[in-house]
Image (tube, rainbow, N blue to C red; front, side, top):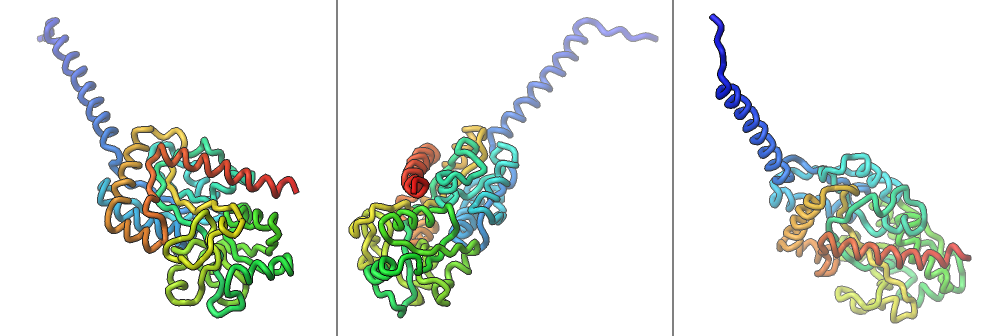
Length: 326
């Protein structure tokens, strides 16, 4: 016996299918709105133990509580941060991969050695802002910046300074000093731990670094700063002169920010930026900033960070141009 479906039944069936499609679309939209719903890869373009690594591990723990997803940290060192940036750019622009982006990687753009463009990445937040110093061994022959400056001018190209690498902020700053008659030999160390102890073993005469990264050696009275680069003295080292007062108008503070791949949904960028802001406001993170000798106003949201890194890039380019013209 053949059963014949009437027109009302056919319309009902189509209506049910349409309703199902609408419901599925609504669920998908809700899932997209709930970003993130799974682990976010946290890329550190430097080796374990350094300042960037410490930032990722500290903020990662806080972010897991705020966004309720894991933030596995992956160290991808090499090429002044370039290897890690390359890994980020190889991933989809879906907000599931983020990376630490610091002043030294930014400097590679200024020196023309970068394999990426600023438009390839989108700033999410600035999490650390800290001045850089020159450190010498405690008990060594350099008691002050005046001692170091005097010998550097008397014997140009003989004093050695440990740096992160060529094309970095370290390089740009030392290039500026060279143009002012302070010529030194750079000794690059890609591994933070080796760079930190190089001055203790007498392999170099000074270390270019941020105080937070070498806190244990400062508190252990193994090294001490002789100059802070910037326009004012740093509260934790009030007896240490700043470069501005000594006639050297160079600052280029070290910053550590967070970026995602260019083309990432602005909504996801905002979610991340807000989350990092919440992490930065916690007592735990504020204590971390103090340990790092960073400024209390280190955090910036995505929009302000974009403007900040743009301005820093212009300053770096202007300083580097003097070396290129020589």
